[in-house]
Structure formats: C-alpha cells, structure tokens
Length: 535
Image (cartoon, rainbow, N blue to C red; front, side, top):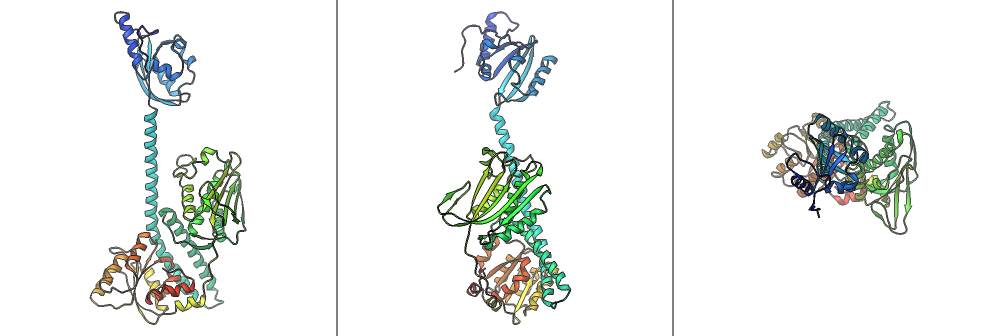
C-alpha cells in the first residue's frame, strides 16, 4: 500500500508559487507516483526522493537527504546514466534514455529534467518490457534461422537433383567400363578410382540432404566401427594440428539398426563441439566404441537403457568443460554458448533427435576446467545374415528382350541408363520429353512392359507421368528414380501400387536388378530369400 502523508514531506519539491500548501501538495502528489523520483541540486546533493525511490534502492529518505548522490550510489547504474545525467545538469536540457542497473538487476527508462535548483530524474521500471522485447528479438532470430534451414533444404534438394544426375552418369559409365575391361588392364585401376570418388561424392550429398531436410531415412543393420572410422576420416581434414586425436574402435561386435549418414552426423557434431571447447584449440580428443552390457534398466541424461547389450560411442575432450546450468540446456534447440554468428545451437539438438529415433540414450559428464565426456548408447542387434550371391544372381538374371521405356530430361543420364538396360538384355526406348512419351502412349504408338522415369522433370514430374500413363495402361509397373526420396513420394508410390522408388545415383548398382523384379510383378518373397529388403 502506498504511503499517504498528511503532513509536509521533509525535503519536498519547492515550487515558485505561493506558500507551504502548494509545496505540500506537490510533494504529496510525487508520493503517489509508482515510479522512482529524485531531486538533485546543482552540487549533486539529494533534495528529495519519493517512496518508490526508497523501495527501489532499499534506503530510507532520512539517510538519503542532503547526501552526495555519486557517493551514496556508486555504480548503481551503468556508465550511460552518469554521462546523460551530467550532460542534462550541465546543459540544462532534458535527456531520456534506457539504462540497466546491475545492482538492482533491472532496466529503467531514465528521464532527466532540469529545474531552477538542479535536476529531476524519473526512473520508470521497464524490465518486463525489455524482457518482452528480447523475447521478440530472440524469436525473430530463431525464425530467421529456421527459414535459413528451410532454404538450405530447398537448395540442397535442387543441388542434389543436378549433382546426382552427374553422379549417376559417372558411376554408371565407370561400372560398365569395369565390367568390359579385362583383368590386368592398366585402365582398371583408374576406373576403380573414379568409382571410389563417385561413391564418396554420393555419400556427401546424402549427408547434406539428411542434415538440411531432417527427413527420416531407411534404417538397416550396420557395423558401427566402419561408420565411425569413416567419420573420423572426414573429421581429420577439419581438426586443427594442435588437437591430438586418439581413436579406439574395439567394438567389432557393435551392430545396430541405423542410418549411416545420421551416425556419421552424430560423430562429427560431437567431435566438432569437443575441439571447439578446447582453449585456443589445444587439447586431446578421444573417440571410442565398445559393446557394454546393462544388467538392470538405467536412466541417463537423455533416455533410458534396458537390461541388454548396447554399443557405447564415447567422445571425450579435455577442454574447458561446462557448468551445471549450461549442461542442463545442452539439447535445447538454438541454445549455444558460442558468440553470435558462430553457432546455430542446433548441433546437439539434432544429435538428440537422431539418438532418440534410433532408440538410444545419451549421457553427459562435464566439470568446469576438466573437460567433457559424451556417451551415446545404441541397442545392439544380431548381425544380418549374409546375402546369398547365387539367389541374388537368379533374381537379377538378364532380360529377354522385354520392352522398357526410360524417360529423363538429362541427356547424359539418358544415354547411360539406355546403355545399361540394353546391356542387360532389354529392348529400350528413351524419351527426353515426358509429354511426348505420354502422347505416344495415348495414341498407341508405343508398347511397353515397364516404365522407368526420372522424378524431377520440367512440366511434368515422374509421379504425375506415372499417374497419366496408368490411365491408359493401368497394370504397368513403374520405377521412379530421384536424387532425394521424400516421404511424400514414397507414400504416393505405395498408394498407387506396383511403383518402386530408386535413389538415382544408385542406378548402376540396383536399376537392372529392380527392373527384373518389376517385370515379375515385384515378387517380394524372392528378394526376402536373398536377404534384400523388399521395396
């Protein structure tokens, strides 16, 4: 409750009007103001403070009146307050500005007005308003980051389409050359190097897509040690020479159901954060992989593990470590301790999402000045049975002149796929224009048993083409190749039935096999015998 004085207030503001009654009324009015008010003389002695000022500074009026302001309140406000207040006093002009008080932990809007005997300063508490403004700015920055990520996803999708066309041609021609070259030919080594480079480029594109799109990938059983080893190979090119890296991948039996690109993303994110936490980029980074057995359920910082075997991936550094407060917010989206513009705050949030999607858990141990240890736990599964090469060869036996149409607007890929399918024994007819092919189908100018089409084409995409062709040939099997397999495309293909979706840059390795399967009505049972997952 506000104080309601009935007598003249000591040190009340004196106004140049007639008498004590007006003086008392002015002082009483100032007492009702909920914002802090102080009157200062030209020599900076305190002439008057209201009740709100007493409450704000925690001192009584009796102890304040007549004292020197700068002695009584050293460093109560920031440097701008002193500069602006002194300027208002000296120049005799009003000054208004915002200032933060570290001692009070509050923001104030300060309004300094000169009067004939000195200065009147009004302190308006705007802490809540500042908090709202900071929240709004923070949300706007987060929105910009999200929009950048969406833009990156769109850009990556476009780049993947064009780049995967190039990769499909490189890998396809390299593969056919390797099949044609005799053993002992000096050209075989060169073609194998071309194929290895293409495979590496393919993995990088898929990793960029997985990061930018955040889409789920098909999970399969993999040995984790080779995936971690490949990630370390990528990491070495970015590590400063002042970071000593040690690796212990003794977990040969660590087989898990994972997406390889996402596992590598986890390793790279954790390792990058680790070496960036080292003062001056100097320190020791250790990466380890082993199998561990839990006999009872156990809860970690993120997730729980059951009484079974897990692959434990550890990333340890001897950097500056973290406080408990920072560690508690590590996995929040957009939280970062890095300077503005040097971190998105998404790395560990993405790691959390990947580990959660794989049914795993995360543990973090860190102490200021003593480094940090991240431990990732992924459930171990039985190793996949080896594929029966004889059964696989039977499934993918050569064609017998079946009529196949391939549609793609990219002439380089068109030439490669046409040669690949002809070599496999199919009667192939190619089209660069989907509408021209559709006209031929509708006019009965082309007969075919299988349609293979690119997805990203101008004017009509592969899915739209398949739907249109099915209007004339309702039972025609279709294979759609694409640089990025989106969930929407997969769902649409499943709904149509007898439509398979193939990663375009894997055309050489899988297209002939998939064509044989499509022409046989997609017999899943035969592929299950071979150990291949049905599409």
